[in-house]
Figure (cartoon, helix red, strand yellow):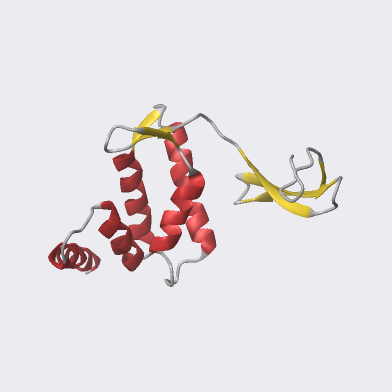
Length: 152
């Protein structure tokens, strides 16, 4: 593994342990050249997943991008980072086991919406406002009203 500090091509593994409920391995490494320490994560990937955007463009599934968007929706809400990690891991596993190598972005969005609806209604509404592209306050108000009716 290349050192992120000095770009030396070799590093030594100092410690390994399970992470993300056993879905990944966290490795603590030390650069053989500069001595800097850093962590890497190793995850099982069942298949390469390509996301087909609404405009027809294709891009590889990016777990970090999904994690970032969920974290933004849940910012300043009582949602633990572990819950976000579990949601993202669950979505990634679902995508990899669907059997299709190309998955529409709308399908991923629906999976996130389903997960966030279970975690926190405000995070759910925040994500929906971007995902469904609310243009006016009345769109937001109508959606929020439908969420509060479901909760009753």
